[in-house]
Structure formats: C-alpha cells, structure tokens
Image 1 (cartoon, rainbow, N blue to C red):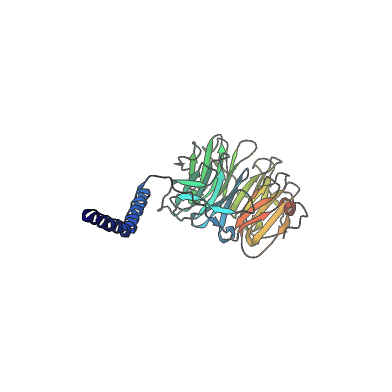
Image 2 (cartoon, rainbow, N blue to C red):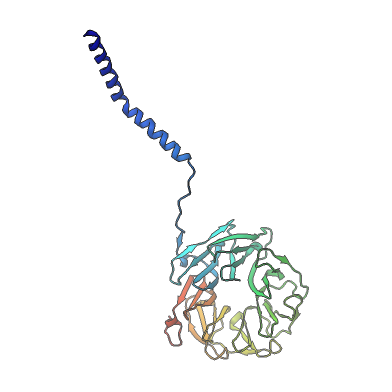
Length: 344
C-alpha cells in the first residue's frame, strides 16, 4: 500500500511538473516553427506599383501606344497609365541614375526607348512598366534630345553638339556616328518625309536632309537664323518646322522652298502633333496651344496660361490629346479638344 501511495505521489509530482512546464514547451515549439518558416523558401508577396501625382513632375516627353500612356522628365522618372486621367504609376528604372530624360517613343506596341542627359538611353519591353539601361556616360555633358524612327529598321537618337547615334536592333545597342556637315549644332528633331527623305532640324537655323536614310546629309540654305525645336510631316505630304519666337515654316516641295506661316503669338514652340481628324497642334512657352484646322496654313490660339511651358503633345485614340510640361500632365478630352470645345 505504501508503495502504491509513493508511486501516486511521484506520478502527481511529475504531472504537476509537466503542467507547470507546458508554457515553456509551447513557446519553444512556436519559436522552432517560426524559425523554420522564416528560412523556408517561398515567393515574395507582390507589392503595389507606387502611384504618383503627375502634376508634381516636370514632363519633357509623352508617348502613346494603344491604351498605354508614358511620360518622362526630371530626375530620370518615367510614369505610365492606361487612362489619361490616371492613376499614374512610377515605372521601374534600372539603374536609376537621376539624370533628366528628354524624350521617349514607342518603336513597337510594347517596346519603348527613352533618351536623356549624360547620353542616357533606356529600353522597355513591357510597354513602359520597367526599363533597363542600354547606355550611360556620366562624363558626357551633352544631352540626347530626341529619338526618331524606326525608318527601314533604323532608329536615331540625336542631341547637343552634334550627338548622333543609330541603332539597327530596336534600340538594344547604339553606334555613335560623326557627320562633319552637322558640326556642333544642337539637334532637336528628325523625321521622314513622305518622299522617303529624312529631315533634321536644330539650333541657329540648321536644317539638313538625307536621301539615303541618314548615311549622309546635305545642309539646306538658311531661311531663318533662329533655332528650330520640332518638325512635322503633314497629311498633305508637306513639311512643317517650328521653333523660337513663334516662327513656323512649311514646305510643299519636300524642303526645296519654305514659306513662313503666320501665328497669333511670339512665344517659342517646342512640340507638335497631328490629330486623326487632320488638325495640327503646336505647344510651347506660356502654356500655349495653337490649333490649325486648315492643314497648318493658319493657326488659332486655343489655350494660353501662365509662364509655365508645354514641352510635348500627343493625340489620343479617342480624339483628345495629352500634353506635358513644367506643370506636369494636362489632358484634353475629345469634347474639349474638338473645334469650339471650350478647353480652358
């Protein structure tokens, strides 16, 4: 009997000991499980793309492909959206150099190229959501200012002091070219005319043409001593160039002769576009928007704001347009953008 009692006492003591110790055992188990989970392989959770306020960014370039909209500007930032009213989200740029981007362009529905200061060239294959560096030269003080093409499979990136690059592989690699006739002119725009020739414009009245897809250039006789910032190929097969102090010229013979177009402003004009209904748009300093409904023979002042400038404009598939400048992004709906639509 005493033996049985002794055994019960010992069992009771053991049971009480286990009961008192179970919190420690539980904590130890939880720690072990947590450690195992922490070091176990598993996919990272997806993070939402950062949404940004597009009016906080100095925008120097805009582009559109289908529903995808892109803008680029200061500090190497690129934003994308699928609606002109947003939301606008920050694209991933690798590596982020922080240099100002000046222009971007879709070269296929999903492939886009961006260029900027320090000879920076970026490329995207996912319609602008992410970008990888193709070229960067921190010691290069001259910026790339424009991108054009592809023309017969050839892309062009041009800029300050005669910078001239070409690519034959959709922007994956670039070759610098030296054209003595270009010299050290700042090059601001390049396009292909309907006759297949290329037109190149820049500072100090520089205008040149190429009949062999950019392999050689012929400088045209000067018809205006100031800088040209942009050029357009019109639906009428004519050419339009524009630039400082509201100077606009058109050519009906692919650059042989040029005639000045009267515009209702003397501000510099930096960007232009042709809307699908044939209207011609020009934007520039002072928040200025000029519209022509007669093939760029005459322009009307559609908008005029403060001292902030508009740098670029693209037409949208719905008939509206998107503009970028010092005040960020401005959108005009098809109703606002229509003749007499009453855009502010």
